[in-house]
Every structure is written in structure tokens, then in C-alpha cells.
Image (cartoon, rainbow, N blue to C red; front, top):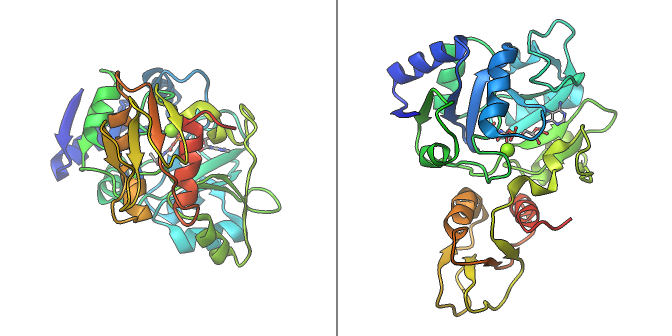
Length: 317
Ligand code: TXA
Ligand code: MG
């Protein structure tokens, strides 16, 4: 696989590769995506093969703007409100599919709903315009691994099945998008992510609940417990570290520890912590430390999504 700096020329070539059915990994403001032409079932099948996904989860369809997104699904009143407030950005809306939507059935795993996102990252925007069609893109990592936040992570995780990785540096948010299902009578958060739940509630004018993850349930497979698991065990909310453990720290005051440490944010900034989270798990999850001790993270703003990922990585319900 080739890593290429995301120049105009590389982006145009990648857009052409997408139209020809190849896979292209690209940066978004959340994490790197593994993209394919969403209307090409064979290309989308190649995504599942490259990721080694055990089953066909529905994928997010990326569009360059809200108008293009609305051609594929019916946003409805709540969806339009959220789109206005957060697109382009780290929000994915699950809506009813338009009957004549050209997106392949495999992309939506045969569901009558479709997950739509308009990313803000300039490289993602330029690629979507160069491709001139909707792009299906899950996070660019092997199934069960943490999401990739740099081109090097994509390269380490995915094989030669990817035509090119557009290198746009580290992804600024570092957590996946918040997935909100607006296809039912009440909006509900299917996956916590880059847009805090409180912000969603403010835009809707009412608080929004988080779906209880029933593992394997097709409407919210993003809640699959193992999704974010590193190989090491995780011990959460620790105040003191044991010998031989790696330490995932947060904040200015860190417990005494002789082993390897990664501080998500020494200043206690949750946005910085989110941006560092997956790289930190990758760094600490290597042979040597069987357990990663994790300091408490405040459960507010982006902290809610960070704690959600950590609980999944710890294989807690
Ligand atoms: O930030 C992100 O969202 C990244 C970037 C690349 O856009 N993408 C990403 O995709 O995280 P993926 O495939 O790893 O996660 C997509 C999530 C999954 O939890 C999936 O189950 C959910 O969206 N999803 C997709 N379509 C759905 C649908 N029709 N109904 C319910 N959930 C859906
Ligand atoms: Mg993923």
C-alpha cells in the first residue's frame, strides 16, 4: 500500500481510484476512514475483506454536503436540525433510506435505514468532490482493533488491499463520530463520539438518551462490546498502579510509577485526551504489559465518549 501526502494531485488520483472500485484510506476530523464507492457493492465487499470483519455491519455513507446527503435519506425535522448544527462535522445521522437511493444494499447491510455523514476535514471534503459520488467508509482499522488516527496506523493495520492512504496528518478529534438515529419517533444516540451528547440535546431542545447496547443487535451494532479491544487487559479508574502495568494517565497529578506511561492530557483537557486516546492504547498495548491501568476520566463532555471506549476496551458491559 502506498502512503501519499494529500496533495491536490494525489486526491484527484484517489477520487479516480474510488470511481474505479478501489479502496482509499483518508483522514477525517474524527479518525481515518477506509473508503469505497458506496454505490459499488463489489468495492464495498472489499472493505469487509480488508478489515477482516466477521459480519456485514452497516457502513457510514459520506457526502460532501447536506444537500448531497439528503438525496440518499430522509433527514426529517430532527435530522435537519442536527445537520444544520453539526454538519460538516463529527455527527452521523441514521435516517430512512430514500427509495431510489443508489447506495448498494451491502453498504447498509440490507437495512431500510442509512447512516449519513458530512465530514469537515479538508482532505475528506476534497476527496468526496473528486470522487463525485457517496463514499462508504468505516474506520480504517482491522476488525476488533482501535481506530486509526494517523496514516502510519492505517499502514500498520491494513494490507495491500488498499490502493492508497492519503496522509493528512493526525486526525484532530481522534474519536469516531457520534451516531444519532433520527429514523424513529424519538432521536436516540447509538454511539457516543466526537459531538458530546449534551450538545446534541441542546440543538434538539431536549435531552437525548443513549441506546442500551445489546451485542449483535442489528440496529446498533456500533455498540458491540469487543469493538475497541486491545490485547492487554484494562483496569479502569485506578488511583495507584501495580508493578508491571502500563499506565494510561490523565491530568497533572499522576501516581508514582516506574513503567511505561502515556498521559492523555497533562493539562486535563478532554479534547486533547480524545485526540490521543487511540494512539495511546496502541502504544501501551504491546507485549510486556499484560495490563493497562487507566486513571479516572471526568464523565462530562467528550469524557462520556472516552469512558465508553475505555469500558469497551476493558470488555465491561
Ligand atoms: O468517525 C466515524 O464515524 C468514522 C469516519 C471514517 O467517518 N467511521 C466509522 O465507521 O467509525 P464504522 O463503520 O467504524 O462505524 C459505523 C457505525 C457503526 O457503529 C455502525 O453499526 C453504525 O455506524 N451504523 C451504520 N449504519 C447504521 C444503520 N443503518 N443503523 C444503525 N447503525 C448504523
Ligand atoms: Mg470502527
